[in-house]
Length: 123
Image (tube, rainbow, N blue to C red; front, side, top):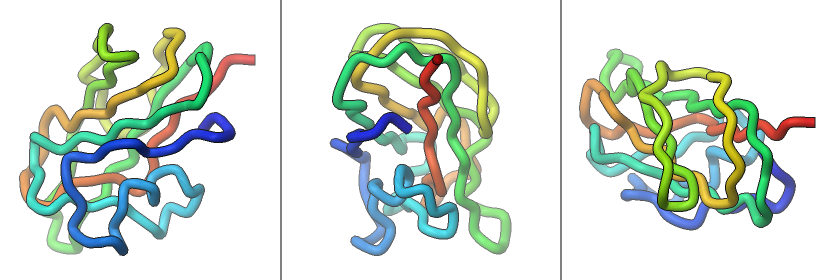
């Protein structure tokens, strides 16, 4: 994730312990969980500067019973261009942007979310 990046918006949070900021803290044990967001879940990251991106990643959280699992996601850059859907994990994609919105495209429903999201900058 770009240095200085912040989570500026989420569809919902289950509680403060499951905040959107957990997705960019580098700790996969901390996670963002929605309050029943299902396929309507989203998270918006401000990279704090225009970045030449070469890949994105969405690492889904899941409940121990297998529920609340995201299967694929899309990204929208600066409110304009949308890429995906991509399977969860890391995917090569190129764009230049500052504001990246991650949308759950398809899930098993429930308190969906992510352990980490990634925006990988080219060298």
